[in-house]
Structures are given as C-alpha cells and as structure tokens.
Length: 418
Image 1 (spheres, rainbow, N blue to C red):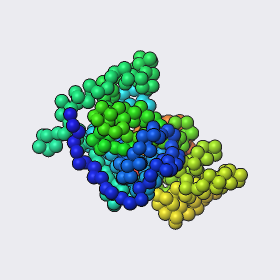
Image 2: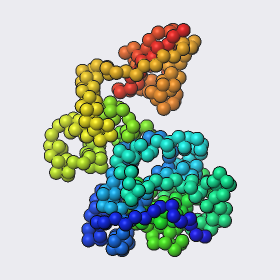
Image 3: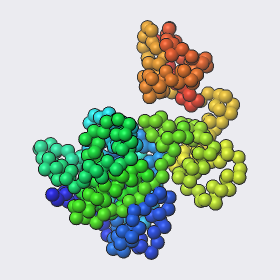
C-alpha cells in the first residue's frame, strides 16, 4: 500500500547546514539515532523535514513542551522545515507511553477544542508565517473519513500496516511488560498506537523526528515503518523531560505540576518561584537562554535571586518585560509582605442553599476537580475571608461577598446574591 503524497511541500533554501558540524543537532538532546544516517541526509544539501507530533489531550502546552519547541526553532533557523503534526486522530487512541493503565477515551469535541489552541501557543516560539519554515498538519487528514465518506486510510491499509510489525517486538516495550507482569490490562488499541504514529512519519516522509525521552519506543517504530514502506529511516532526536513543580514526576497537566504557556504572568512567576532550589538549575539548563558560564556564576549567589531572574526571563518570553516586572512586584507584595493581589478576579453568582465550598472551588476552576478541592482543604490550603477551612463539607450558608484563597497564588472574589 502506498501512503498518500503531497501533504508536505518541500522547499529549496540557501545555506542549509552540511554534515561538517552536527553540534546544533546534538546540543541539549538525550540521544541521536543515528549520527551516520543524519550525516547522509545533511550531505544531500536540502532542507530536511523535521517532524514533531502533539496529541491534543489538553488545551495548554506547558514549559516541558517548550524544551522541544525551542529545539525546533533552532532547526528552522538552520534552514529546515518544521512540520507540527497535530494527532487529532491518534488522540482518540491515546498514547500508552508511561501509562500504568489504559487511557480513558477522549471525545472528538474535546480533542478539537484542545487542538484549536495550539497554533497561538507555538507561535510564541516558532516562526509560523513562512511555509518554507513551518507547516502544520493533522493526522485526521489520512486516518479519518472525509465528508464524502472516503478516506486515505482504509481497513485494507490498517491490515497492511499491522502486518509490518510483530507482537513480540511490541511487547519489548517497558511499560507494556510492566503492566502485564502486574496483571494489568493492555488493550489491542494501545498496541496499534505506535504503528499509527509511525505511519504519520511514512505519510510525511519525515527526515528527523523529535520527541521526549519517554517517546523512544514510538520513534523507533516509526523508523521501522518507514523502512518497511521503502523509505529512508528518519533520524530520532530525543529531548530531556522537564520535571514538574512537584520535583518528582515529569511536567504534565494530568499530574497538576505544570506551568502552562498560557498562565497569567502572576501565575507563571509564582509557580517558578515555588520550585525547589536544586530543581531550579535544571530549569535554567533546559529553559533559559543564558550560557553555561552565566548559570555557573548564578550558582555562587543566593538561590532566590537566581530564581527571580529565571521567573522574569520566562514571563518576559511568553508575555512581556513589563508583565515580568509587575509580576515580580506583585509576588514580593503578596509573599514577602503577606499582602493580597491588587487585581483579584471577581464572579457574581446566585446564592444556593447548602452550597458546598468544594463545589464552588471546582466551578470557579480554582481546582481541577471536587476531589482536588477536598484534598486542598485537608491540607489547610484553602481560606475563606482569611480563615483557614478544615471542614471538607463546609457550606457557604448565606448570601454575601467571599474572598477565596486556594493555595498560595489563587485568589477569587465571589458575590453570592439572592
């Protein structure tokens, strides 16, 4: 079966890097597979198609994603074409990487809403208005039937794709073996995911693919798929995973330890200031534009001063220098001087009898769920009108104005009227 053609346009650009120096490709990466294959591609003196895939499982891209996005920008500046693949079809399957159980299926509506936010976010880092440097495609273009009922990927193609890889090779995957050893289920659809992601590379004729270090298995399957479809294998460059604000797990919205690109300046500044001092240096390495010498010099000073510089740099990048200065002043006023924000979001709602505080916190999105709201209350992390709340069943018993504080940084004023 031949994959569809013409989805990514190749351009001829001057000053494309040769294989004389691979340092820009290696810099900041974890593993390059393989260096000899990359030299071969670069010696063809043409712009390479650099692929990076994002499944739109959440609306917010976070700082962990920017480690990869900044690397993509380096490739753009070297004259290559970045292809951002939105996995709106594969998101229906769900990437099993690092999962201890089968993901809950997403709805088409949620996927579409999430995908619609990505272009504005990546534009903060990538050049998106030049087709020779940036193209965005969705894998629903070949996996999902068109309005007329036709599709580029039929049942026959699926059978052909599945015949090109073995179950034994698939079960070499660490997370699959671990789950089977523990008696947990691995669904057939999860076995299909790496094949479908690999087929994306076949369709795009990708030369290089970037992914997090936890994506290595999926990326090696893509190389195998290209080989079996008669194409040159893509080069794999895996990137380090940014640890989340909890200092333990990789940054992820599902873990609640992320700093989103779309966070307000105050939120972003406050979250950066909340990370552990030791973790901060890893953030400098992966996120800052400062040189290694500058970072080493900062390590000889006070950690808080360095963290303020990091927070200002990141807020400036995604907002502005003025926003960074204001966020720093606000942080100093709130935390050093025990004040409150000068600009607190306000909501007016009708009063309801027996209104539970956890319901209100979840409704105002001060917590991701009622369960999280209960956990925060149990941790003495919720205040109402400056009073710590300890009762997870607390009700707001009468109409009036309430100042809610959830954690150190989230404030919300609520007017409950009759």
